[in-house]
Each structure stands twice: as structure tokens, then as C-alpha cells.
Image 1: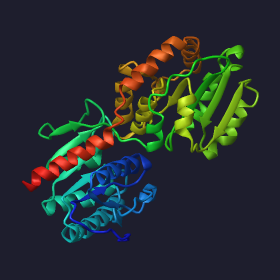
Image 2 (image 1 turned 90 degrees about the horizontal axis):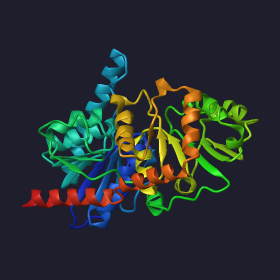
Image 3 (image 1 turned 60 degrees about the vertical axis):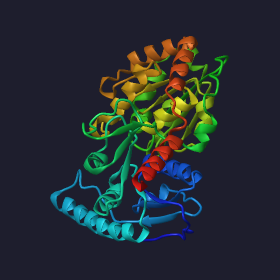
Image 4 (image 1 turned 90 degrees about the vertical axis):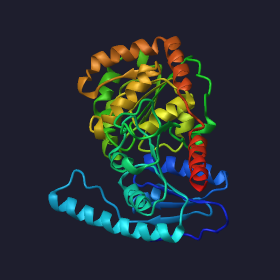
Amino acid sequence: MSKEQVKGGNQPLVIVTTGGSGGHVFPAEAIARALIDKGVRIAFVTDKRGQAFQGLKGVDVYRLSAESVTGRSFFGKVKAAVKLCFGVVRAIKLMYRLKPAAVVGVGGYASIPAVLAAHFARVPVILHEQNAVLGRANRFLARNARLIATSFEPTLRVPGEAAQVMVGLPARSGVLAAMKTPYPAVKEAFRLLIFGGSQGARFFSTRLPEALLALPAEMRARIELTQQVRPEDMATAEEFYREAGFKKVVLKSFFDNMPELLKQSHLVIGRGGASTLTELMIVGRPAIIVPLPSAADNHQMENARLFCDAGAGWLVVESDFQPKAFAKRLAQLIENPVLLRQAAIQAARLARPDAAAKMADVVCDMIKGSQI
């Protein structure tokens, strides 16, 4: 275990645990910040992939061994199970050493050791689920959890006996600063933003351009296109757009100014990840959502359905994608800014910008109840 010094005190200590991608770690960090604001001490438990956690002042960071057992060979599963067992043993020792008032699991298999150890040590547990389908790790851990906090309503595959509370998905501070920015007027240029996250962006680099090139030439001449492209697909995308006649094209593998890009955009095309949809809601922007087909339990499809059924966007199933049909629908949207503005309003109505604060309130209420 590696750690940084935590300064003690009489305040209760809460362990926040998750790992892996920023989609898990960023909400966990936001929850931790909100708890700190309420005078709660925090320890963060993650795995070796938890480098996305930037660290908060006065917070211990503990790293335990944990690996997923799904999608592996028999021997791979045995190896992962052994690592998880070692992680649980070390987490139990950590529980008795730190004596936390509660453990908050924010999903991902990296949360399993600390949550199982909390059950063993009789420490109350709250799970936070970011998607519209309860994730595999949270389903495994749900039986003994005091409460499951959700980000979408409804959330599928939550055990019937489990207590639930709707809080929303905590967002990054930069996105919150752009909350409900007025929808920009469509004048000479139409700003189209395309991003696919770290998974599955190949579709946007190799198939989607066919539809964009099928737009009328005079319409392409009005479009300012900003697109995230995986490094290995950059040459292909550049070739697609070289003679396409767009007003402006910006292609990058990573954007560090996503809140600003969202504020400027008239329409977004993206995947159905919970973080993506949360950011669209908070900023208030319409979107065409193409869920990642390989997402576990098809959770991106369920996320996207709730977003689009509310009138905030339009759902496209990747397996049904036809470039000419997509281009026709996209052209209709570009020519109808009133419809886009209405969808932007609907997206903003779905926003839960106080998700982190609500989650912190839930945790603090549980701690107080456990101490009575």
C-alpha cells in the first residue's frame, strides 16, 4: 500500500473506493471533495490503475491488488481471483486500522476488496452507480449494502430488496462552471462537436465521415467540425476530411477544453457513457447518441434511451447505421435550429448539478444514523 499523510482529528473518516477509468475516478473525487467540505476526513482506496485520481489535500491514497475475472481464460480467472483475495485481506487490515465510519463504493472491480472488507468489519456501505444499469461489481456487492445511490431513473438490475436514492452523477468542476450556458445562436457557422471517449471512437473516425461527406456541399461549407480521433485513426480521418469542403476542421486525440467546446457547440455526436450524458445535461446541449455496442450489459443503450426519450437528443443504433440516411437526418437538424434549441432546453432540465453534494448528505445522514 502506498499512502500520503492524513492529518487526524475528531471528524469521522470515510473511505471512498473505486478505480480504473476516469469515468469512475472523477465522480469518486467529486464525492470526496463534497464530503471534505462537510468536515469529513477521507481515505481513497483504488488499484494500480487509479492514477486518474489527482489527489486531494489531506487525503490518504491506498492501492490494493484487484483484477476483473470476466472475459478471461480459466487460468486468468483463477489468477484474478487470487489477486482479489489478497486485496480483500489487506483491505480488512486497513478497515481495522483506520476504523472508518462508512465506505462509499463508486463502481468498478477495484472497489470490491474494500467493500467486501467493510462488510466483514461491519462498516456501513453505500454504493454509487453511474449508469442506468447496475454494474457488475455493484451487483455483486449490492446484497449487503445499506443503500444504492443512482444517477438515472430508473436504474435497471437493482435488487428488489435494496434501498435506493436518486442523486445523479457528480461532474467535474470545469463542466459545472459551464452549467446551462445559453444555447448559441446559429449564424454563419454551424459548430458540430464529435467525441467518442477512450472506447469505440473508431466508428466516429471511419464510418461517420461517410455520412458527413454525404451532406450537401453548401451545408458542409457552413460547418465548423471539431472531432476527437484516436491516434491510430488520425491519418484515416484526415484523409476523409482533406477535400470535404468544411468551413473549419479541428481533429485531436484529446481535448483539454471540453467544457468550452460544449458551450460553443450547436450539436454533439457522441457515445452513451454516463459522464458524456451528464456533461451534455449540465451544459445543456442537444446530441445524437450512438451507444457503444460492446458496453457491459448494454448500459450505454439504456443511458441513451433515457436521455433521448426525454427529448434531449436522438438515438442511433450503430448496427443500423446507414450513411445516407444519417446524413439526411443530420441535415434536417442543422436546418432546424428551433428544434435543436428545444432539445438543449430539455437536456438542461435533466441536469443534477448538485449530485456530489446530495451524495455527501446521504453519506453524512447514514453516519449519524449509525452512531445513534
